[in-house]
Length: 76
Image 1 (cartoon, helix red, strand yellow):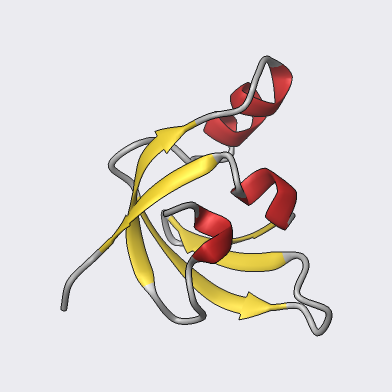
Image 2 (cartoon, rainbow, N blue to C red):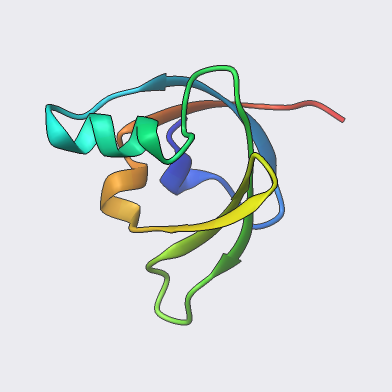
């Protein structure tokens, strides 16, 4: 599953970060690295962007960019 498909309030763990060149580096610089927990906090009224909680801070990310991040849903 990719990060853009994660439902509101759901927590997951990043398994892989895709993208090419500067995009991939920017995502990694923002703390979106494999084995990091991430949760969808809010979704904009029109569905884009989404607000994530990662490493204790809020991060807004376009769905287009979130499609490059693979996640695995955490079981309660």
